[in-house]
Amino acid sequence: MYKKWSLLLLCCLFYMAMGSFGAASAKESNTARSAENLLPPLEEMKAEAKTGDLEGANLSFSAYKQLLLQKKNDIREDSPEALSSIQTATASLSLSLLNGEDDQLLQDIEILTATIEQYSNGSLQTDPNKIEKTNLAAYIALLKETRKSLENGDIAKAQVQVGDLTQQWLGVEGDVVSQSQSVYNDSEKNLVLLADYVKNRATIDKAVHILDKMAVNLEPLQKDSYGMWDAAFIPIREGVEALLVIGALLTVTKKSKVPNGKRWVWGGTLVGVIASIAIGFVVTYFLSAIAFGKNNFLLNGWSGVIAAAMLLYVSYWLHRNTYVKQWNQYIKGKTESALGSGKMLSFAFLAFLAILREGMETVIFLIGMVNRMEMSTFITGILTGFGILVIIGFIMLKLGASLPLKPFFLVSSIVVFYLCLKFLGSGIHSLQLAGLLDSTVNESLPTIAFLGVYPSWYSTLPQVIVVAAAIAIVGKKYIHKQSTEKRTGGSYS
Image (cartoon, rainbow, N blue to C red):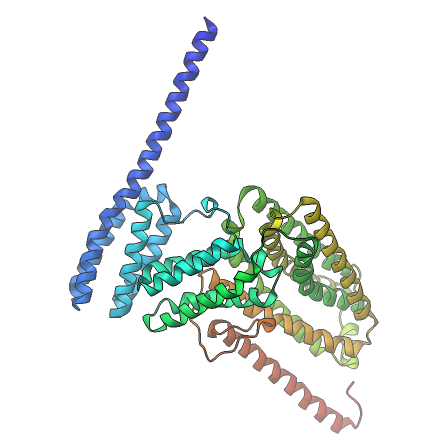
């Protein structure tokens, strides 16, 4: 009797659960389908915009916003990501209506309409965790589909597809960077160019050209499996720049004779390594490379910009103490606590940022290839890569420590300034990929990947300002040195 009632109770609970699930699913389905009610005001707005009736377009847009306000909470409950996409498209439309830009207005109406239609029929890709694993073959197919949309004049659809290309890039970039650094750099630059070119009908031909170029560059890189050196190359490539930062900081603390100075730098480095491993674990078991992608762009961008600001200061500080006499006066005039507290804390934080920035890239790249090779080969490759990285780091530290004071500060200030420029440019470029900054480009600007220079004033102008400031500082110091030597009749060094 007990078993009979227990079985009956379990059945009831099962049907109740299934009923709740069905009700929730029905609600989600009804919410998405009901979003179609947002479309009629947009159709009216489009017709009015075509005839130049901006007053009527404003009224239709107000009717649309009123409907969106009524459905906003339901859409948020169903899919916060979908609501975010709709609101972003709505904001762009509102801006073009306010500015009275006829062509842009029609284009933004099409984009918003396409976004709502895709959400309504369930084809809007809003949850990165639900996106299937992307490989190069699928990515190249999406490039060709986007090209076809542009050829058919469906710019709204192409813009959505370009967004998908940016999002899904995180699932394939590990495949690319392990085989061709130049193709990887070109692809990241081209994604920003694409986002800008598909905004304007006048530059559609350029967008088509870029899509063709990306497909041609990526097609030879398609392969189903990887070897040990593919995995080994990732930590080597990503770790060298971090080593340059850490090596310079460690050598500075050694030459400064700061007690426990190395511990601060190594402490920041260790925290960065632990944070990278922890995030790698979370991404591996709870997210996907694509799900983590946009956040990685943001993290990479902000860490790059912050690290660049700190590296600029370190480069200036190194340059300022290039001359032996000044350095000795500096050390003599500083107390142990003054040199060992605030500056050491900033050194530790800079080491942490350098490791975290490169660590996030390493995580994404390795996740992209982990399922396409034997686990033993994968682990051997990683250990080999880190082993080589340790050897490179040891050589860097020995060389830096053996350099005389003046050449060390001179070389270090140049290296740190180079990293400052690169982190600044690539950091802003990542913020553009994340959509936080506008992707507007300028074709007259060059692309210099190893310096982090991209054809956009958003990233290039800050670099130009930094270079101009550096030239002014170096020039001022040189003039001061010459005048001092003339007055004293001796050497300034």
